[in-house]
Amino acid sequence: MPNFTKQAIKDSFLKLLNQQPLSKISVRSIVEDCGINRMTFYQDIPALLGEIIQDEVDMLIEQYPTISSLDECVQVAFHFARENRKAVQHIFNSANRDIYESYYMKQCEYIVRTY
Image 1 (spheres, helix red, strand yellow):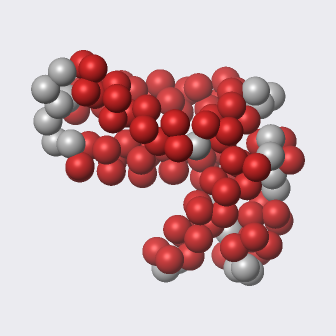
Image 2: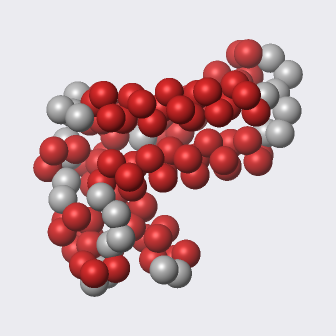
């Protein structure tokens, strides 16, 4: 799948997640929002969210290969959460919260090992 299609899917999902609860978002609503064919959507929503989290962590580590203090690390890490506050709240309040918490914990472990 072309990168621009993957990015369109991720952007649409984040846009919708900032507007409505996770339980209201379907694959159909994502593909309709970004204007792609349903058959192009290759994964389920939890996997999509996990991929978005992984992308953000990878970008964070690439932009900040070294961190001089714990404060700086926390400040950088929470930038994405502040920009997507509603999305984070919708994930936190979702019925599948435990699935998403496991994604976050894996990424936290990865960040700690990397730094």
